[in-house]
Length: 500
Image 1 (tube, rainbow, N blue to C red):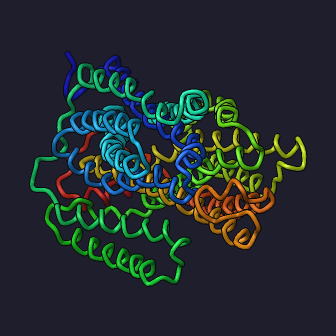
Image 2: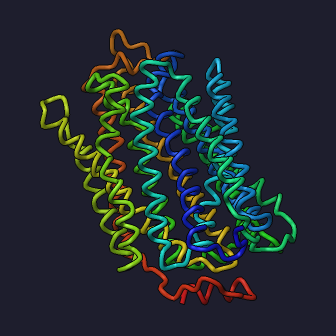
Image 3: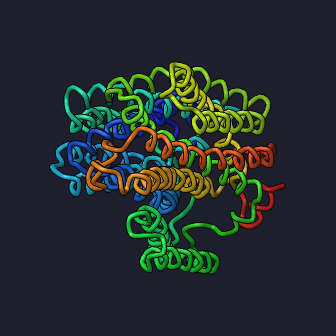
């Protein structure tokens, strides 16, 4: 039997495998969906803005619910939330597969997003609760490995499945994986004692943060279509800002808040979380555009594009765990800085390279994809460990969900903004071109030179953001005075102790 409070080393290995497997499934699904987006766009005759909602709707709901499930997990136990997330994610995969139109598909992806929020909000919390600080970097390294390998295999498998079986099957292939993970979690994952006694749930705060995130993302996604000066767009952004302020005031005064505002007093915690947000922004925005890049610029089939992305990321199998071990031995700061610099170099290469001029251009693009994966594998485990080192022991779930909220908000904004820049550029440049309708999957009739300009503009934004990531990584400092168990009495006191 498992010890519910102090898992043995063997039990820790089992738990580590189950956590990594769950993250692998989510990343695998993200990969196969992303690589299939051009095919879905053609099949349903919809443009990149509309088809992007297959990803955006999922990530939007995921981001909105992370803080909520993080708090619930503190009350009811991390296993219960994690298990429920796997179940909902699997059901959502099946419903997405049987969808007959874009509306039904997006609705099914929203359900999947709720399951993803439950699953992913618990991952750092479980690691920080179960594994000692001296090995967390290595565990986060394997989680990073599972994430990248899942994403890479998703591109490879998704390209083949989409090309030869149809896009519906990209959702069906994750159903048995999700069912297996659910069974393993139910039977082999021990219960973890809740870290807090139930003292009421912050329904008002939950509603405010959900509404604020929705009103932030929606106008950014719709801005290029309705116009950035549209009263609806401006009004939504202003309303979102006002609701965020109301949320701040409410959480600061409510007795049992969804999110402890005092966490914002930790400078080092916030620096690392912001760095994680910006990194997710760049990584996801880039990988969202790459399938379109290969198919529109180089005329590669979906299976070939997926295979290129898969093969170019295999080095992560070694890099992720090594980065985690390095963070355990020499600290998290240096690996985070190295990963940030590599990512910045990646975006510069993608911004200035023209793969249509010869083989050298194609080689440089492939090298950039390899460097992108290396940057992710080096930066993510180190930064995750750095963030969690500043977590007060009684607020592990809250800090975990805050970290993931920033990360997945970066995912949403990365997809939305990169797609918006690309779509706006080619729409503006091709508006008066003969043979370009501007409706449906019009990107397939736009000249290559115009398309490449759109990609370069999006990648340039990524390069600018990377400069900020490098700066934040240099400023970040790990808390080396971490204890694995601490019975703090007052949250403010724990914040001060952790900061010191």
